[in-house]
Image (tube, rainbow, N blue to C red; front, top):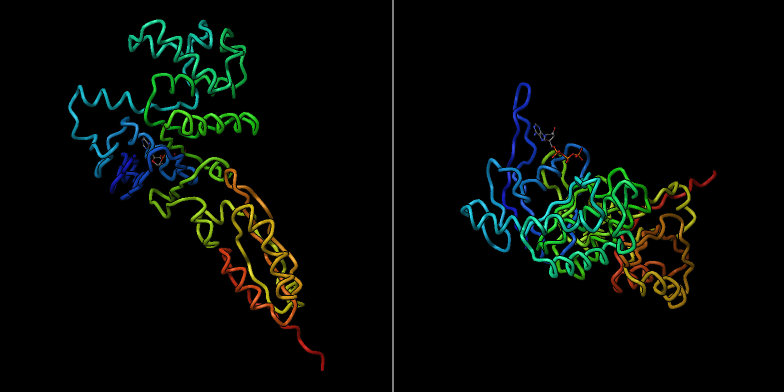
Length: 336
Ligand SMILES: Nc1ncnc2c1ncn2[C@@H]1O[C@H](COP(=O)(O)OP(=O)(O)OP(=O)(O)O)[C@@H](O)[C@H]1O
């Protein structure tokens, strides 16, 4: 578990210091995939560097499994550093060494013996989908494959925490999906706690179970992604859910209009048809759409209902766990 408390970090600026982090506190559960989401300059890399012990904060504490890292002495600090791996955007791979050799390098430096080294390299090659590439040289790989070699290197020594600063930057959608799959497998199969930073909300939607949103060095929101999207006004919901772009006039022809967030197979597939037949109301979807958050189907729809029991149908939908926000309907001007 990573606990960051009241972290503040500034850098010297031209006239006044640049406040990169302002009193930021986050909590990353053990084994979670936590995404720090924010625009360029929000302080994401600075936060990742402070957690990776590569940067010293002005104020505040970083605890790894409850241990305040600032209080550790030389030997203990080196041990803790070994538990925290950081993925570089452009991993420094040795051109003359094979993929397997590059992955083995950090283990060689740690003095891990031959058989153990081979077994660990084999495991992370498999985890990163690079087994077939083990004997190739970095120059023969795509950028996405090189990024996965970097991940394999970072994971080889068996860290407890992996910090991935913008892991999908500069690679195409397919390569990005490959990198996110590896991060998910690292968490699921090796129990690694992953903290990634990104400007791309689709990375949070596809891969993260927890999120912290940074804006101008401040944490404006954090929590589980599925929890935060139940409030359509949250930063996470606005970044992750399909947008509703329905002209208001379209609502006028209905008795009730509401925006709903439906989470999970059961509610997305069955709730609306059941409400329609139970209450004998017509339910039309006049905006929004479907997406997936991780593996979970999620809908953000604008529903328009017609029928005397429209209100009761909406209450029934809400009682079954959907998040319903009524939308005011326009009344049509009546011609004189
Ligand atoms: N070493 C440094 N010296 C001076 N200013 C810095 C330094 N590192 C970061 N900053 C400043 O701190 C602020 C936060 O930068 P940071 O790189 O953490 O943001 P970011 O959210 O990671 O941005 P990006 O997504 O573009 O990487 C920015 O204003 C940046 O210019």
